[in-house]
Every structure is written in structure tokens, then in C-alpha cells.
Length: 488
Image (cartoon, rainbow, N blue to C red; front, side):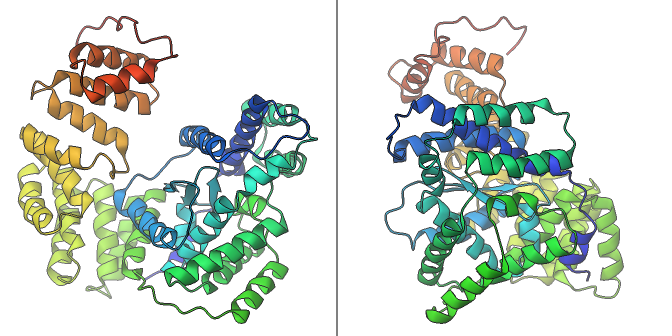
């Protein structure tokens, strides 16, 4: 079986401009946000609430600039590792959220407010769960240290609005070559002053060390990840510039980490789920590569290792992505038969049935599994989706409602809930979810339409009615007539 590292060497095709756009936009928004504070010469560091609001603004903007992977298995794995670390942190300032970006760059970053982003490229190169945990803990160290807020506080004498305008002009121009954008960004980082200092990095490392030890992870993963970043840089791989800009690395820092780990004892007690990590790595690879090419590779390797479950899983997922449904289903069936200790493959088979339009088979596969594994949200979502396609709207709506706070692809959930509720004659709530769906997708006209219809249909004493009315205060559109349409 070819290693994940072999695949990585073949895929450095993403442009530098694309990798650095999030960094630019973060700087631009931070500048515009700070300018609204109208600071006095001796203003204090922004409050926790201001930092939360800034994080919300940044999240909305980042979501429009990158492709997020909403696969619940991928996001759920990152979130589970992050949540284990969060349990070791006392007095957390924020409610942390985790996101996975479809991008080959070896990158992870956190924005004020506790939103942590991990690139799929980073997931592919980590060798174990420890290394991912160390990256997440380091980002939490920056957030808990409030380093962005400190950097902004230290910029009192800098004309932030002017600097932000310069970044915005460069970003919005769109005509700059990737190399020119990258070269300019270094100077702009220095001007704006948001690049983490050596002291920030060391503080984040110390915090991460404490969090990791309490959570039972080995902090040695910090060193291993740093070495990987340097390795890809030395090999001439251009997939790491954004990480190196926001997280300066050096041999001295690795030495500091080695001394820190050697000076303090830390017992590893967390049971790593490296089986799940390997599945995640296969999935993220398929998201970024031609699935037909990958399927052929897996077939060749299976000819000499026919019972390798990871090769078989990679083949099945590649075939499913390539829309070779029956071959994918056959591969998943074989997985279920030879890997009886890993029941998650049953869910993969059910999802393959659903994707192929075989809804009855999806229900017969997922219903008994979901009953025995009620915590598996993938099984629930696709079971509900199959019920919806079969016309079992009440059963589907019940399950979809139970997933409102946990399913990562919120727009898909909102849309499916709306579809369920229309035939159930719950029109007000249906319009409410269609409103959320179109709002999440940035379709303001359709969002206004469904909001107005929901307000007209919902009981005035209902919680959803109050939520919509309160949300519209100050927006100037709560009394607008819905746009004329030929059909719902």
C-alpha cells in the first residue's frame, strides 16, 4: 500500500493566493472591526464579548472564502479530539468550534472567539492522534492566551484603518500573481503587527503542554509536527507558507520544546483512535484527488493484499465518489463481512445504498444499526434522508430534529427538515427552516421571502415566531412583503 506521504508529493497544485486569502481577510476584518471601536490613546484590550463578536464576523467571512468539509465523520473526529483536550482547560473564555478546510496546505489556525480550523492537508500528514491533538492544543493556547487581542492592543500607534485598507485593496484587486501576493503579505504582516511573536508561540506551547498532559496525550507530537513542517519546506513544497507566516518556526523553537518536555514528566494515558484517523485520511485524500485514479491504485494494491481493510475501504469510497455505485456497494459489503469488529462499515454501506438511490436497502441497513448505536449521527442522518425519500415524513422529521445541534452540514439539515414539514402541513416551521437554509447559503431574497411567510404562518406565541421577529429588529425588512413567486 502506498503511503499517504507518497500521495502528498503528487498534489502540490493549489495556488499561493488561494492559500493565503483567509489570512488576508482575517487581517482586513480585524482592522475594520478595531476601527469601529474608536480607541482612545490609552484604550484597554478588547473585552471577551468583543472578541466573540469579532470571531463570529471572521467565521462568516472565512466560510465564503474556503471550501469546508462537512463530512460528519471527518469533522466529528477532529471535534472529538478537541473536546477531549478542552475538558482539561479550566475557565475557558469561549465555546470552541472545529472546522476542516479542503486545502492541501499543512495548516491549522484559530481566530478570536474559539473557532479552530484544520486543513485537510494537515490531517493527511499526521502519523497519529497525538500529533493532531498537539496541533489543536497549541491553537487553543493562542486563543486562551488571547494573543490576537494582545497584538491589537499593542498596535495603538498604528493607523489600523489605513493598514486594513491596504490589505483590502490588495485582496480585492484579484490581479496579483500568487508569488507577488505572498511576498507582499510578509511586509503587511509586519506592518499590521498581527504575526505571532516568539513569546506568543512559547506561551501557546506551554499552555498546550499543560492541556495535553491533563488530557493524557503525549506533548512530543508538538515536536513531530514542527519537524514535518520544516521537512516539507526544505523539500521545496510550497504547501506550507500560510502556516509559517502565522506560526513562525525555527530550530530554536524545536529545541525549546525538547527542553520543556525533558524538564517535566507527562504520562500518556489517552487511548488513541488511530484506526479512525486512517479512515479520515483516506476520505480527505479522496476529496482532493481524482477518485477514478485512486480506485485504480487501490485495485492494483488489493491484487496483492486482498484482505487489507484500509485498501478495500479506500476502493469503496473512491468508487462511491466516482458514482460507480454497484461496485462501491459490493466493496462495502465485503468490508462488512471481513471486518466484523468495525461496525462503522455498516453505516458506510447504508450511505452507499442511499447515494445509489436504493432507499429501502438503506433503511433496512441503517434502522437496526441506529437502534443499537443511537450516538452515531451519520446513521441517523442518512436513515432520516432515506425515510424522507420514501415518503415517511413524520419519521424523517423526528430524526432530523434530533440532529439540529450536532449535524455539521446545517444547510442540508435545514433543507431536509423543510421538505419533511411541508407534506405534514406544518407550513410555518417549514418556512422557518427554508429561511435558515437560504440565509446560510447567502440568498438574501429567498431568505426574506421564507422569513416573511414563516412569520405569517407561525402562531404569535411560539418561540420560532419570537425568534424571527427579534432577529429582524434593526434590519429594516421585517415588514416587507415577500417577493412575488410563481410557486413555493
